[in-house]
Length: 134
Image 1 (cartoon, one colour):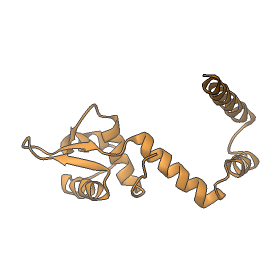
Image 2 (spheres, rainbow, N blue to C red; image 1 turned 90 degrees about the horizontal axis):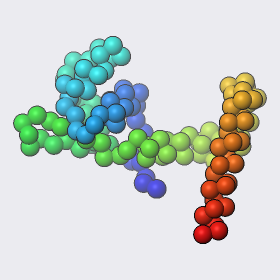
Image 3 (cartoon, rainbow, N blue to C red; image 1 turned 90 degrees about the vertical axis):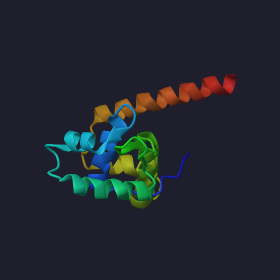
Image 4 (cartoon, rainbow, N blue to C red; image 1 turned 60 degrees about the vertical axis):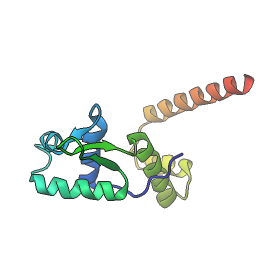
């Protein structure tokens, strides 16, 4: 699995979500338009954040077309996997059981969530069994 370089701040994550949800490369003006209502930013503020995202290795910028086109380098799934691993390591000593127990005991998840998780785990187990047979 790809090692995600650094974590994203809240504003950076919002920018990345716009880029991830775009079909292909996206301009800074398009990103700014998508962020309207969530962030009251000037273009210069966005450009500073995009430069930081580029420096961190999250996006690339193609300047060959006359307008900067931003493309993600790290996919949303790659980022989520890395962030989830760091979260689990830091807060729960790498124990999914401890995390689920904490969420359940604090009523953050319901019995129906546990049943949904159980079904998901059963599906994974069934897939693994099929792969082992082949």
